[in-house]
Length: 281
Ligand code: PYR
Image (tube, protein in one colour):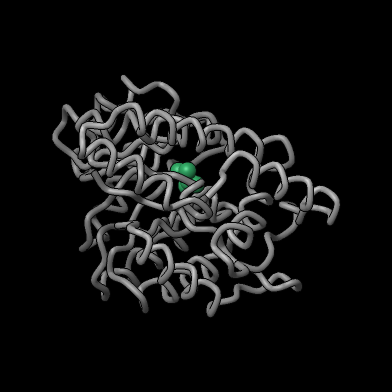
């Protein structure tokens, strides 16, 4: 039962990556029981980062831990391949990619995209499947056809869809906060949770409860997580995570970057107050 956190990308007020804040955040999450750090995911604003910025996030993280999954995907395949080659020189868990998005393309192109990454990578290659964001569902049948994918993060409310990958015998994680408990309880390899940025303790408590057979407590904590996530969604989920890391973990992870605008002071104060009510530590 691994807890994977897709970390936020901490920016300065003028939009540069703050590497010191990355390291502080990663160190704290590991201390709080997180097993694996996923860099440049959705919560990390991956599609909004340049290749150079993706590499910076990876460098700052790997200085702290080798338990890293490095998301390298983009619509510019030469940049993606450069990142894959860069990672070949390092010790890490895997490189990962979402499929090429935006364009309407045949399945064979997606299969080829992943095969090309595999042929360039000396590391394991994981799929980041997030159909509601990318418009492409790289399902278990496609993964079988690709043939070289050894892990998947499926950000998907359809749990059976995720379970199909596990049938192939590859590392399988579901990336929906609302399915954290289900993912840990059902024989998947673990959960990927954006809320883990600000509430790693809750994920850890869910895991502990499951290990102790205390399902009631696991369910209770799962609903605290769901309530927090629903609250963030009302004001702007990705911006809100920056606020809640500071609120609950006690240090700043800087700012998001436009067009993921920071919350107004008023909105931030209301969010924090509501969040404290939901999660009374
Ligand atoms: C991500 O932020 O990358 C997730 O999968 C949740």
